[in-house]
Amino acid sequence: MAVFFPENGIVAHVSDVKEGVLLMNLGSPDSTENKAVRRYLAEFLSDRRVIEMNPFLWQPILRGIILPFRPKQSANLYRKIWKDSGSPLLVNTRMLAHELSKKIDLPVYFGMTYGKPAMSEVVQQMKKEGINRIIAIPLFPQYASSAAIASLDALWRTLLRLRVPPSINTVDPFYNFTSYIDAVAGRIRLHWQHGERGDVLLFSFHGIPLAQHNAGDAYVAQCYTTARRLAESLSLSDKDYRVVFQSRFGRAQWVTPSTQDVLAQLPKQGVQNVDICCPGFFCDCLETLEEISISGKEIFTQAGGKTYRYIPCLNAGNDSVFVLTKLVSQYRLKS
Image (cartoon, rainbow, N blue to C red; front, side, top):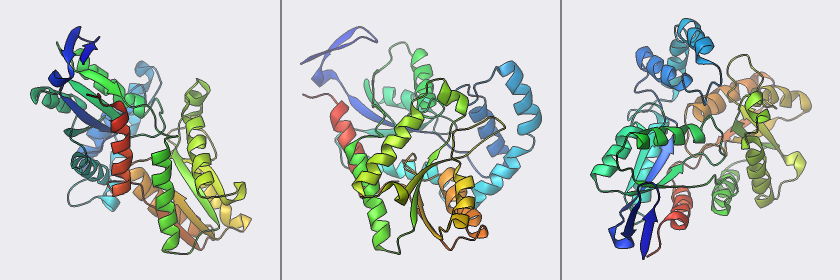
């Protein structure tokens, strides 16, 4: 079978095509040292997908107000969750790539939007190893411009610098993908089997600025679809679960309801036992392990709550590998 690559005008036979899988995630600092965190935050917060503000206005704020102080605070948070082998996000993504490579007959790589391994370095390595067709999987079930699209931007910028870029097949957002819903629902059921079930299950998704939502970002709608599918799979009524949004940053309005606000309010509403999971994160990271598992519990218990249990992300378990295997099978070339 012949295949035409419009990106480079090449016609090749399937036997001439060497496919590879690229898992794409957000990234982490190289260490918990203040300098490393500052370097990471400078790159992350300079991305106009993340901060949609004129850089001539934003950069003085970033360089003069935020970067002199926030790295120390963020470094302290990273130290709470850091592993001997590195940041949890890096460790989980690396392990996920390794486990996936054992289940499919394609080489699997991973790259980060910010930090290391940088997307540019990974794509260059793939080219050196003869990969001329990449199945790109942003590890964000719901596509926000500040996360999944930012990772694709990093990929496209790399391709623009290549004389003969590989062909790219990008996996669509999988917020409604049955295998993903089944995997997350299965994790929640397993959690309930090993302990008392909470009065309410919170689905906490990373928030986005309200301005991005009003501009037409489909992310929030995709989050609600994921939550609805999970609720149906778990036979939950409307009163059994809530959708909340975490990780507010800056003074701008963000989509609501806020995870932190809801956690503080629930005990006053008679809810003493809460389960919480983060179906917008494929791998655990700072935002799930510190913000939700640690700080979220503090907010809830200080407000009078009794039992608070965080349900981990899929990470590199067999169920998560199965999800990616199914996705790859849909996007790879058929001989």
